[in-house]
Length: 314
Image 1 (tube, helix red, strand yellow):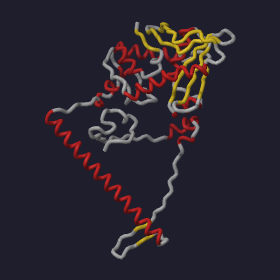
Image 2 (cartoon, rainbow, N blue to C red):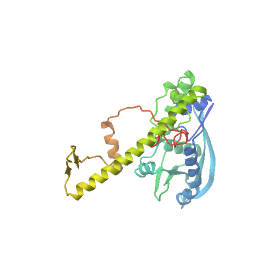
Image 3 (tube, one colour):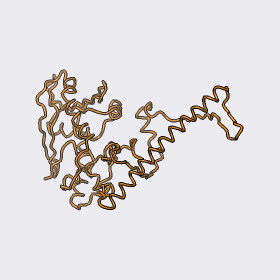
Image 4 (cartoon, rainbow, N blue to C red):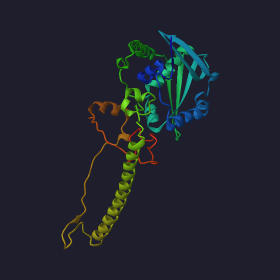
């Protein structure tokens, strides 16, 4: 019988496939470890307000049950009773700004719903309360699950996983659209072998190091030129303002002019989630690939901080 964690059943099935096979997985990066630790540290404060009016029966109680050929296990943050004597699973979640905003609009991650559905089933609870708090903010959101309807979906997903394990073929599992992306996934090198770093040593390593150094020198020179360009434009703008004109034509030729333009864009943060969902089929997606180089010691050189396409590199 295969054992899976309740927190994993609604996550990436390909990650679960490689875990159950015992394949080598990458250690969580520093940023992921910090987020996990922050969630643990915030659990007490979240449960303090989430469990108000409830009798706490147990904390971190283990739950385990069999679902076909799988054994689902986990630890509930809290198991409580309400004033009617009904058992209530309470799950605490600390969320980043965007994830919390979606939860506040009742658009909760399916992985969390599946996790809590497993806890309800395993504890024979009448309902569950998911309590979320915004990281670095005062926002709070809650959701009540009356019945673990997600179990049918979970059973279907686990049946596909079982077939993939039997055939040793992860391609039988649908590639998921993870809300966090594949870059931080511990199984990323199994799904994307080209992402695995290759370490250049010897003569070739020295050659690459030399090119990195040259690129760093070029990037520094470009930054100085860009700064000088901005200074010259500011000086020319001051001359235009002094003569109260938008166009300047020097005797030696050339032109300096203010050019005005207007661009309209959608304010994504202001659009309600339900409208975003309606617009989703109309987005045009394009793919591109570009090379980013991180000189030694620059942020991104260690592989962290660049999973979301952030700044850095040359």
